[in-house]
Length: 127
Image (cartoon, rainbow, N blue to C red; front, side, top):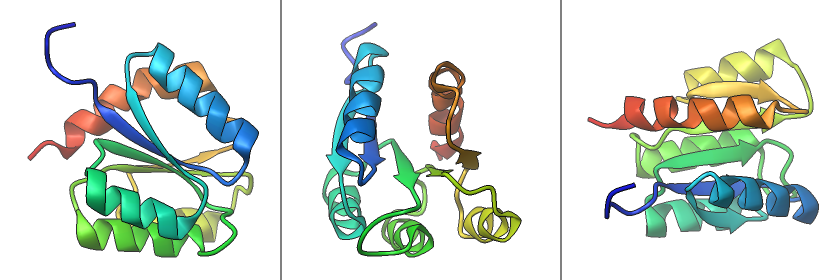
């Protein structure tokens, strides 16, 4: 890798174990990671750190994932958001994609496939 900084991924997940697992996986794959356990924290970090990508769990304790996605997109429309959920709900999928999410993935996620897809999501956001 060149001297360019590692792309920053904001992991938004209320489960400590899952958040830690994603952090390790991403760091081992060459990404810098910021992490949030709540929607409000995610919005604050997205505004402050301008991540290259957001991995957004939809089941957060304080705000619905759709609201978090909308707030992040309102603050920084070019940040790609990959929504992660335990529910395969077509209405949720449609609403999140309409709100600007790059993808809607149902857990359990194939983490290796996700890691391979991340550069494409990040590249598609470059204006």
